[in-house]
Length: 235
Image 1 (cartoon, rainbow, N blue to C red):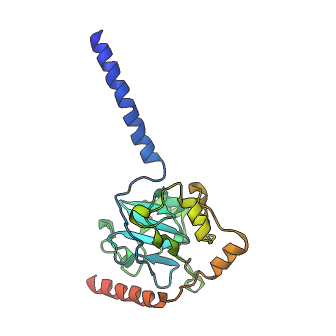
Image 2: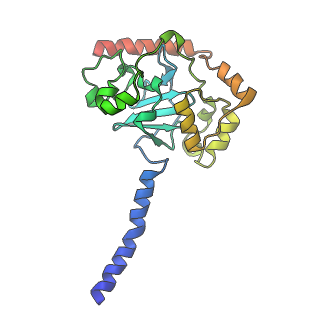
Image 3: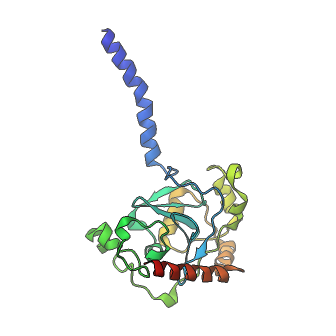
């Protein structure tokens, strides 16, 4: 009898801990082992509506109003530069992210080895035939028709360290300071799933028109090209 009482108490003490672990894995905001203490330097990938972070030791991108990270064979996205992050399923990753050349991955996984630095990763080969069929044509596009990159949420530079906005504060700050409506259907889906406010009407249209690189970004673009040439030499 005494043994049964002790066993019951032990099981009761374990139950909350198990529940917390499963919830932490299932919901957006999980820890991905990446800490970005200040707003990162983001440089346009030449010819793509995507930015990358050349000075970070991570596969870190910005596309169509959201930040994206590829780590441990998973894609993650967030509306804020240091999260919270949510997992993105391979079948709904935006095609322009899939098309980014290998050289712009600052921490490429081992299976990227041998792939051309000026071409995209071999996602079909990596994720298999079913994925390749579902995303057929992802690597075929008219480069002349590439959209302009979305404007960066520069207001987030003010929120660093202890001033970084908490998760409940982020939607309101984003809505007030970043009047941009995503164009990519897969990104719109991410906005909806995360409850991120989307700018609509004239405000959103005006912000969309200003999506071309702003003052000083031409220099950043040249920096990106230089980085690519340096990577070519390494390869």
